[in-house]
Image 1 (cartoon, rainbow, N blue to C red):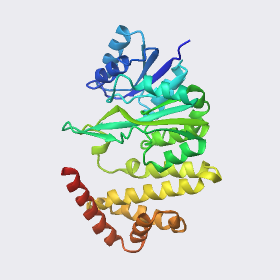
Image 2 (cartoon, rainbow, N blue to C red):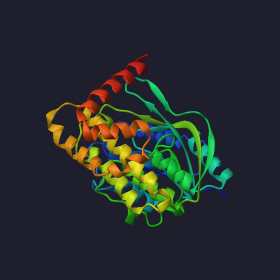
Image 3 (cartoon, helix red, strand yellow):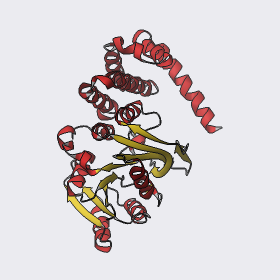
Image 4 (cartoon, rainbow, N blue to C red):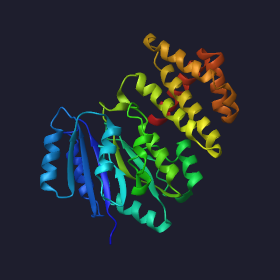
Length: 327
């Protein structure tokens, strides 16, 4: 019998975007799938749009709940799923038609528990950037997959570019912290990857991440956006086996450098407290600095000893990078 896929879509105030998203899932060349959409207490017309799709398409299941956040919405969808494999799609994104057929084919061919791929970013002005699109296919054993996930280089932390065997989700709810609003994808991914024995990755980009001006990438800094990513990596570090301990430490350090770098680009004095807090956190981890590569090790020491020099260097670096992107 053909395997069934459960595709879970958390949706909060997605009325303008949800039809395009659902149409792209229903247009998948792999047809034996159910689409579980969890309306997380939307205040716009999301509920009406969703109920219309559920009435017109037998494969679409509508769930409505009070607003509890994206993690709670995803977990609610997992509880309602009946498929052999589970995937996630954000309500304002879309998929190319062959995405799930390709992921499932790779998973079965390699006897894997997880199949994943790259993605493309569609900017508001219409530009498209592939991440990464080399077309390389590689299998990952348990430890390689976890290290690649923590490294965050080629394999990104998004849940939406992946297909998981449903048995991996056992016990997940006890692991997830609903208070975390940012980087919850990495937290869930780490749990699922830690339970998988084998993964397969193909560096193609059939998932279309549509960047909106109202999306998280355009928000001002706040407590969750800055420090949730560090809290996630701290939890991973606390629960990592000895074989992954140094990888988890490097992941935390690199995240801290990134947070401080973002704060350095904004000279607003209201963020002075956040800058001081991030610098203090980094200074507490000086013993880990030798684990970093040369460039990041220098940057970490600059933050700790001469933060002004880091701010000047980082701003210059970003300007040069942006100029290269424009050309």
